[in-house]
Image (cartoon, rainbow, N blue to C red; front, side, top):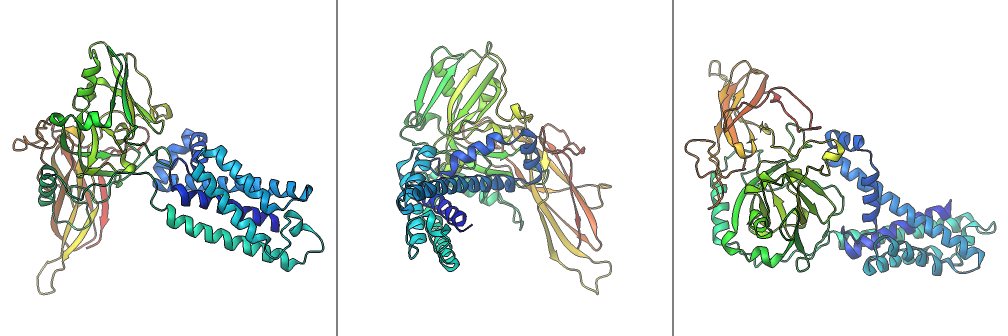
Length: 516
């Protein structure tokens, strides 16, 4: 029992040591185990987890990967201790070597391997202090007092805790290098951000028009870390000639660089979920690259985007007419978690299509299934119209001397319909029996040269693919049900029929019971 606990402590220290050295990067020893866990999870379980657990499901999967990695190092440590006992070699000299071998086999990273071996060696050394230091036999010999075995375990656990603390501190930066800017945002970007701030409604409880916290969903629990200087984007498949572009090629297209407000919504989120956000992205039109490679839109049907994390998604070639390759977000380089150095943005489509860490654009002559389509999802089409209800604020309570007075209430949220735009949002405070029009934020501006949406007659310069805020203020004295619905820029009302996210995105009207 004591030996098993010591081996587990060594496993924890090895994993923590690796994390201290490389953070949550592909070189982290748990990263390949996490990939195996993701690949081995049945599609039905993935769909259930996305709809039921949301982000928690991904976190639980990563915790499982961590536990399996610790277990792998623990088994290696126990096996090394048995060999040390048989050949009468100190375990303190053998167990770390076993951990080094496991770490090297998992990642091939020298830094991660040495750190894992160092963490394991420290715990093995601490466990041997005062016990003879010869390894497995120290804990198992009949003449060793129980107090000695307990001391060995406590010393190992203390060492594991210490290494874990250092690992959490040193590895918390998440790893991966994103070049820092000089802290200044270009005049054009700052002007657009200021305009977005000015147009944001003053409603407590909802994100401004440019999100402060942008959601993140990935297929893996450890993001890739492409080097900008080595990154390339290939255009392949049914083209006249394969082409390859590096980061300087994209950013050097100065005449094509645009700043676009674009909203992304996750196909797997619940109807009133919070996986929908907006940012100001900087990049270039994707067609500039495809045309240079030579494509025939009449003969080809589709495009497959591929990414550095082995993710891939397919969609119609026609969707790329206004497609965008972004390398900036809100005036800064793309964060690692949002696709650094370059990601795709395809107007009006679900978030999954907007591939991060993009490395290849393959032009196809026949349809093929993307990553999620192979798993039963149908999220490659245009997003569903939605009006979300996230804020319920009590602005002012009525006074006793005011006959019939109640509490002044305010409800608010966001509405989004992809490139169709939002025409109106309506609110019912009686469960859907009657409706009143809500106040909408002014449309976000379009970038010069960006294709514009005509969601409203006076919004010809509106961002093509961006949400709008809404708010409605009223007076209430009794409990009531608030229901919200949106009409898109083409005059189509948001469907009232409710459906779950799987397989084509959630639909329905959002409702909430409110107490004044």
